[in-house]
Length: 217
Image 1 (cartoon, rainbow, N blue to C red):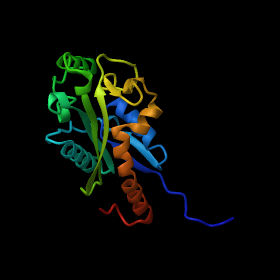
Image 2: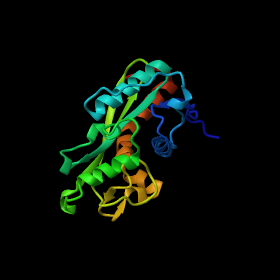
Image 3: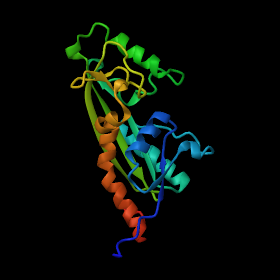
Image 4: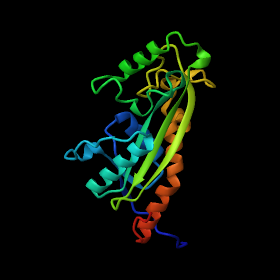
């Protein structure tokens, strides 16, 4: 029997979110890596992590560094949102918060559609943006970005996904993201593209840990 490299040991990775939709997507996207995935729900004593930055990268990095330090565990965080050209790029980094903490996804989607009521289809262009940050407990952090171009539909469609998915239209498919199966979304999405960019770094961290060299930079 040939002797090769031992099978990699399973490592823990904290997903710095309590959003079940994000957790479901991350689990699917990371399923091929030797990782035990935890979420903030596994650390109920952790304080709320603020997002004080003015960019997706600043917020993702702040979350990842804070959670990695508090848990002593490799952490992946993301910040994402939708930029709508007819609204000057809004809601952007404030996509989850601009209507206040009590607003629902349906509330935010209804607000967007109301603002675009008289905007013709050719001017309803938009993009999803996501930045993924990977941080070690020692404070090393790197960020990776993904984008998904599309436009805003004239009404919500579909029951899948979360956030702005029911109104984010993928023109080449003629469907909103909420109408796509999860596997299809994960082949195309901004979060998938950011995580694909981060994958080589994650694999390198895992390999260095396996070799006993520490997390590195």
